[in-house]
Structures are given as C-alpha cells and as structure tokens.
Image 1 (cartoon, one colour):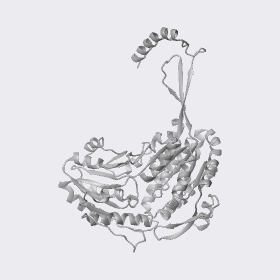
Image 2 (cartoon, rainbow, N blue to C red):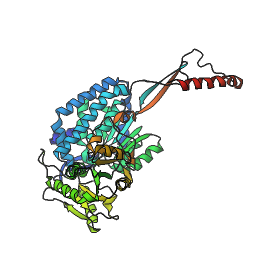
Image 3 (tube, rainbow, N blue to C red):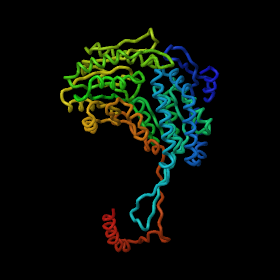
Length: 509
C-alpha cells in the first residue's frame, strides 16, 4: 500500500486539523496520520447516510444482493492487498489474516444469498382464519451505527455492515483508530461495485466522543468491544429507545474429557488459544483437564506451544504474529507477572520478544493458578492460557460456568458425551472437538454471548432481521369487516359464539 493510496483512502474523512499517528505493530514505525472527527462532524455524516437511505431501501433486495456478490468477487481479486493491510495494521500472522478474510467473504456471500427470502413478505396465522388475513413485512430501521474493534477489523465489520446494508439500511461505521484502512479499502471496492457512496460512511476519532456521537444519532447500534464500553452503549441506546446488539468480552473455557486423546486435545487447545495471538474474544483462555491426565496434557500442550514459530512476514513462515499495541503488551505482561508473584507456574513462554519486534510475546502456558490470581477470572486478551485440574465432570462444568462471561466454550473428547455436556454450558457457542472455528464459521447460526458477554446475536437470519422492524398488516376479508357488535348487548350474544370458535380452532392441526 503506497502513501498515495493511503492518502486516497483517508480523503474519505471530513477535513479536520486533529490527527493521530497510526503505527505498524511489528516495528512501531508510523504508517500515516488518521483524521479525528468531532461529534458535530459525525452528526453530519449520519445526516448524509439518512438522506441516502430512502433510495437504497427502495431498491429491490435482489439488486442489493447483486452488488454484494460483486463485492465478494472483487474482494477475492484483491485478497493479497487486503491481507497485506490486515497485517500492516494489526501485526497478525498471515495465516490468521487469511482466516479473517475467509470470515469476511463468507459472511458477505451468506447475506447476499439469503436476504431476498428472509426479507420477503410473510403470511401470518390469524385468530379468525376465514375472515382475517395478515402479513408481516420487515422494514429497515433507517441508519445503523456499527462500531468495530481493532482485533478483527475486516471480518467483524463485514459481519455487521453487510446484513445492515442488505436489510435496506444505510450505515455509519466507526472504525478503531488503529485499523481504519482495511474498512476504507473494502468500502471503496463496494462503491466500485455500485454501492451509493453515502450509504456506507466511515468515521474515526476519540472512542468516547465519536462512539457516543454515533450511538446518540443513529437508529440502531451494533457494537463489538469490551464489556465496560458495551454497558455505556446499551445505556445510551436504551435512553433513546433504539435497539442495540453487543458482542463483548469472554473468558472462554475448554473441558478435556477423560475419553480424549491428550495429544490431539493439546493441538486443539493451542489452536483455540493462540489464534490471532490470543487477541480474540472467543479464544480459549482456561482449560480443565482430569487430574489423572493433567501432567500428560501439560507436557503435550507445552510441546505444541514450543513448536510454534513467532515472527513477522507477509508469507506463511510464522505461526504467531505480534500483539497490536504497547498497551496490549503491557496488559499481557501484567497478567503473567501477577500469576508468577502469586505462586503460579509458567510451563513455557512468559516473556516478551523485543528482538523480534516491539510488541511480540511468547505463547504462554500457566498452571497451579490460585484463587487470587487475576488471570483466573479476567480476560487476558493475549497468548496466555491457564490449565486447571478436576476430579468429576460436574466439577469441570461448574468451573467452566463460574464466570461473569459466557461467550464461547469447547469440549474435547467422545462426541456423544461432549454433546450431552454442552447442554449444561452457559455460553452462546460451544465447540465440540474444536476451539472456536466450528461456530465462528457457521454463518447461518447466531453468534453472541450469555451473561456479561453481550446481548443480541450476529450471524444467521437473526443477524439480518435485527436491523429491521416488523410491520404487521391485517386485512378483513369482508366489506363490513368482522361484523363485531358495537355495544355490550351485542357482545353478550357474540361471546358464546367466540367460545365455540375457540374450541373448533383448538381441534384443528
């Protein structure tokens, strides 16, 4: 990506004197200066999107779908550029950039293909089948605010922006300051495919000022980020009586069953814990193993982790990339230091790698974690996993559920037994013999969290319909309507007939 093309992309933003430097995480060198918008400028962007929304909503759904399918194909043609941008802004390994790209195009393809049927007029059951007829229409809410984080800037954007657009809304999208380029590039591709320019506006700036400005002016908010910020978004949305969906933090458990092959289980756990350098809301961060197999599992997990190559390149040479910022590095170091200070053992890793790059950190396995260790309950959001032993499966289930979070979980072992146990896990997604990819890649299934991990769901038909209002149209099929009486005496005569009708309808299939 040349300086000229970067300048072209950020020219999308309104003129402002305020900027922040965006750095390459693998080198800490400045890439470019990102304009920072004010709340007033965000309001103007929302006005532009609102003006464009009516014509966009009037377009047939299949026409909107054709634009998105063209975008899908154009993204495939520009895959290397998108992967380069993802690595440039996040520091992630090439393999994890590919995984994110697959999620982005998969979600785009899914919504383009199912929207026409999902949004079509539906006939509804009525209380009086002969005399009444009703239909339900899904109507776009208007302007949708989408607020995305830095860790998966492409996939999470497309999972929220595309269904909002397919439902007939316009979108005002707040990107994280660190990762705006990839969204700007995809938006430019979408415009090339026929998307009206003002239907998808992108804003950037101070998280509180710009995020609040979006929430305070749009008609629905889709937010992905921390639980603390999610509460603020929910409160501001509730004050305006607008809808919101929130995908928030996770402290995701894995339960290893005694039926599991410990070597295979270790490989699954490592893949689920260290994807995207652990900077993933659904990443595994605590694993529960039968005490009789704990030492064996730990040895197998350490062997897998120590085989992972940490480094930076735009090819597939390395397994683990960089953390994305100095704040992330400090966060991870703080959790590991706290664990060590309170008697936990670091089986492998536990050190920064400044010789590789400023924010690189070894994938880390910790055991013997006491009740007072902060990583036991708090989300690390880095390449660190804790190992815990259990005696009975009920103990493991209780421990897995003993968290304020409930986003993702994994169960590894005999499939039938694992499925049975999944019904007792308090999480929005449960993966059997996988870490997170089995559910994350299920575009047709809802994704979200229990408890403090969020509200609402992305993905699936519900991920599209959340951006709509349901309008019911009821039709009386006689000229005189239902012919119901207007006074109490008439209702007295009608009541027995209504009881008879109810009994007849009860017997119908």
